[in-house]
Image 1 (spheres, rainbow, N blue to C red):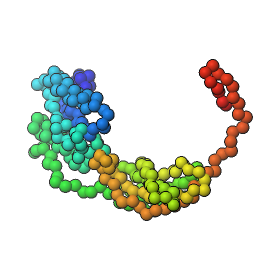
Image 2 (image 1 turned 180 degrees about the horizontal axis):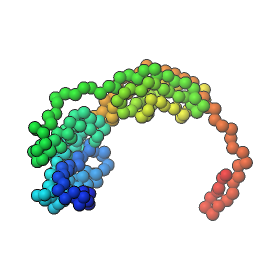
Image 3 (image 1 turned 90 degrees about the horizontal axis):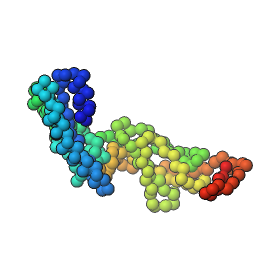
Length: 234
């Protein structure tokens, strides 16, 4: 960051800079180093800004981490434990606008964060369909605008236990199967990680299809030969 700021100042000697620190994310449970390094970076950044700021080219510090409600204990401003949801986007903008107004005299005041926000559309996907595919079953549905991902859950048609997989497009290929098995599927829309502040919609109705397994024939001319540490098969 010191080099970035120096290079920018060398290109424009009277450059005015508003520079934010880095927020924490909700704890991953096994990355204490990430928490410690983030705190260390924030402390080091204050020294760098004081070192490089001048009257002709001031650098103003933005306490983004203090205004963005994301901590190791939780992240109500994010949709996945870090990245901003609607509330978080306003909090980030507010932190910048406060510095831009108070220190650089932009605008008439800092941005105010609204009390509520429109709900993200996580409506039930429509036109969910399942069909046999050469390598199992293909599941498709109409995309829902604005969602980040979908969950697809599946089970044997005579089973009560669902398995869930997350996909980023409105299509899923179920290949972990043998031919002749009938599978049942349901789909839902999701905005972020539901365990970290994200939102999930309702499950669609069920669709079913019987898996195919039209794999290519086995290879010919298989050869094996010894190697110094085992076997080589071609």
